[in-house]
Every structure is written in C-alpha cells, then in structure tokens.
Image (cartoon, rainbow, N blue to C red; front, side, top):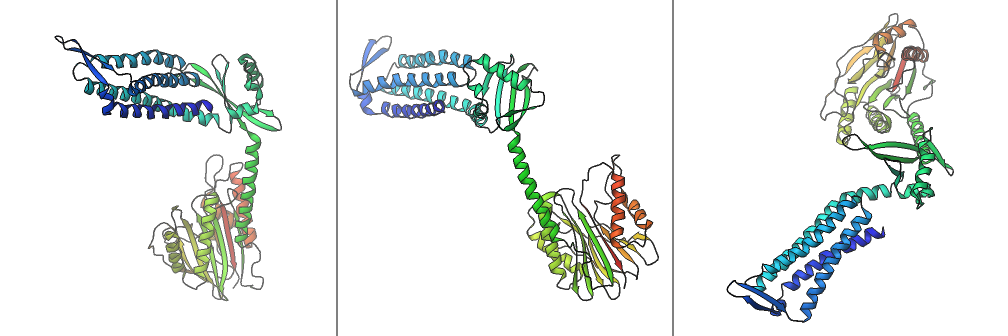
Length: 488
C-alpha cells in the first residue's frame, strides 16, 4: 500500500513539474538570461551561456529532479512488479537516452539560441511525459489485477514450477500466519505439507473449514509455470446457503398459502367435488391452480404455467393469479378475462415472461362450462359413462406475449358423473432415465384405469404412475393437477 501511494505521488509530481518547467522555459526572462557566443562563425557554430541568476538555478534543479523522478519511477517498478530484468534494462537504456537527447538538442541549437533552446526544452518535456504516460498505461492493468487478488476474500497462494513459495494475498496470510515467514523454504514446506497432501480437498483452520483448489498454470507452449492455490471458506458458503434455503422455504410457504389448500373447499356444496395439487421442481415454482365461487351458481377454475422456474417464475405467478382472479370476479366471460389480464401484464412486463392459462367457468346448475385457452394444455374430459379423452380446441396466444391479443370462448357440458382433469406440461413431459416422455397417452391410460375415482384418488393415481415411470430421474418441471367431479 505504501509503495503504491508513493508511486502515485511520484507520477503526479513528475507530470506537474514537467508542465511547470515548460512554462518557465517559455518566459521571456529565461531567454533574456541567455547570451549567444560565437565559436566558429565560418562554420556557423555558436554556444550560449546562462547568467548565474535565479533562472539558471531553477533550470539546474529541474534537470536534477527530472532525472531523480525517472529513476524513482523505474526503481518502484523494479521493486514492486514482476519482470525485474526488463525494468533494469529499461533503466539502463532510458536514463542515458534522456540525457543524450538533451545534449543533442543543445548541440543542434545552432542559430537562434532562444527559439531552438525553447524547442529543446519543449521536446524534452514531451519526451518525459510520454515515457511516464507509457509506464502508467502498461502498469494500470497489472495493478488492478494484483489489487483484486490482494484483497480477494478467498486465500490465494502462488508457487513456482519448483514448488517454491512466491506469493500469498492478504486473505491467505491472515488464514496462515506461516506465510508471513521470511524463510521461503519454511513456507514452501508448510504449503506442501498442509495443502498438496490434503487428499480430502479441504483443510481446517481454526474453527472453519476451507476448500482447497490447486490448479497448474501453464504457458502458451504447455509447459508448467507454477501452481495457483485457492482457499475457499466452506463455513461461510454453508452459512450463506443456509440463509438462502431458509428464505426460499419461507417463499415456498407463502406461495403454497396463496393457493386453495383446504379440501373440501366448499363443504356445503354437494353439486361437485374438487381437488388440486402443485409440486414445484424447485423450492418455489411458476405453476398455479385456482378455483373460486364467482356467485352462487358459477365456479371459476384456473390452470396456468409461467415460463421459467424458481423465484422469478413464482413472483410472476403471484401477479398473474391475482389479475386473473380479480377480472374473473367481475363476471366477464373467460375470453374477456384473459384479454384484460394480458393487457395488464404486457404493460409491466419488462422481463418478457409469459404464462399459459386455461380458464373455465362452470355453471353449477346445468354443468355447462365456458372456457378460453391461452396456449395451455388441452383439458381431459370424461362423460358420465365414458372414458377420459382430450378435449381439443383452438388455442389462443400466451398471456404476456403481445398486447392486443383476442381470445375466444367455447362451451361444453359435464354430465352428472362426468369429470374434468386439468394439468400443466410437467405431467406429460416428465422424462425417465432413458429420456422418454410420460406423454398424454400414458396419462389417459392411467385415468381410465379407474374411471370413477374421486378427484383426490384421480390425482394420486396419475402422480403414482408418473413417479414410477420417471424412477430416479430428476424432476425438471413443476407438476400441477386439478380434478373436478360433477354431481349435478
């Protein structure tokens, strides 16, 4: 730190002093102190002498400090940076070169002493400024990298290709005081004994555990240059993970509480039975279902699937669910509800997410369902004495995808003893270890094995068959189902 600050001070002083000398050398008083003396008039050779006034001494101090600044500038690079041999070569070359350039400019001052002397000092100042700026540019990127490494939270240790200790950042030195030892051999032995022979990939320091990652550093030709050792604090990572898991669990509970979860939901209504489940692929998901009494004779039913997964999908899901519910409670048709929800979502959809929705309104007294579909899966319908079949109809565009979309209502009836099964694509697209989809055919087959099952048993049968088919494969999508049995 002290070296960096001193170097920066030297940079600033160097630039300021060069500009000050440039200003001084431009002043008339400076040239009034110069006397041109002929040496060989025939050959056009002249010399000049400066009176021993204040300007003479100012120029002398300028020359001395200029050389001193350049020397200090290079010395700091040699002491604090890599590539010391190159810097020493530059020091040997540049100092005589600057002095030689100054002398040449003086020798070439043959005619008008004031003008050419002025030019000489201008060129000299430009030369020094260019050199210093060049050094500034060349060291800026390495400095930034080194400071980033120096103050990184993870401990970083570097060994050369002979396993000799060469560097440790501040974090590593705080963890391992042995790295501050002045004896490189002791440090090397400590690193080799405690890190290289750590077969488990971690080590304990105090009361905390650290993951040890050792990586070979190679040059462009593939030859080993050394080793980069990183110490990551497992304890801190575990604590952060625990905090995130706790927050996700709270989010999961909030999301679950937003969905109807008490069954039967309407104990005094004997005209129908309804049951639904939502199982997210992660802690929280983007699927949702909903059902609600719009009035005494109309039941709203929603099945939806938000694009994406995790927390973003869950937030989008909450917004979409509330909008659809609010518009549906106003008594409009399903198509109108989807159109209003689409416009509201599109106005504030900078993340460009979307949701597929199936919305139906059951007229409880007649069994008539008026529905609209915004890019969602086809519902499965069972007649009173028939089998479960897909009810295919025209899809509308997804909600949130584009403003101004229009949706169409369609109607169908549930007979007494008939049923409807709604789901998201996580059910038919569940994949087994052989990368085979569960599919809608297996879904229909499972539903038809027990055509008269109550809604809860209906969902349990499908989930059991799906789990058996998938086996040990990881669940990659949310799985949401709703079953309704119409009793009339």
